[in-house]
Image 1 (cartoon, rainbow, N blue to C red):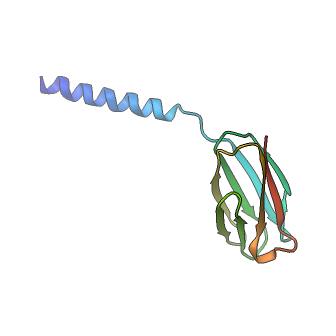
Image 2 (image 1 turned 60 degrees about the horizontal axis):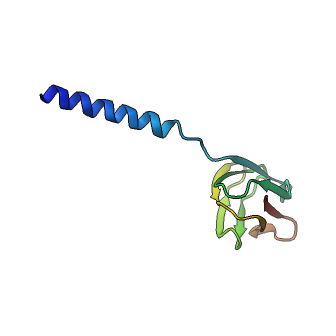
Length: 112
């Protein structure tokens, strides 16, 4: 009987891993920092879904992604990438900026 319990536990664990692994990953969106600007300056994402925002800082200096409307802030070292999860968002516009270069590093996430 102990062997049957072990077999059941292994089958349950395998089924659980298959089910969780089969779930769809969040949609991804790429945002690049280059010459102290965000590209694209307007990033369109689907409303009602959690988004994995990948921010790639191609400048040699750090920048801070800051957004009060998204309730996010994250420092991105020069030459590196970070992931920032946002949403699910209702339809609308969500402004963001680079705290270290506010005059040039500006953008908006548009959920539609």
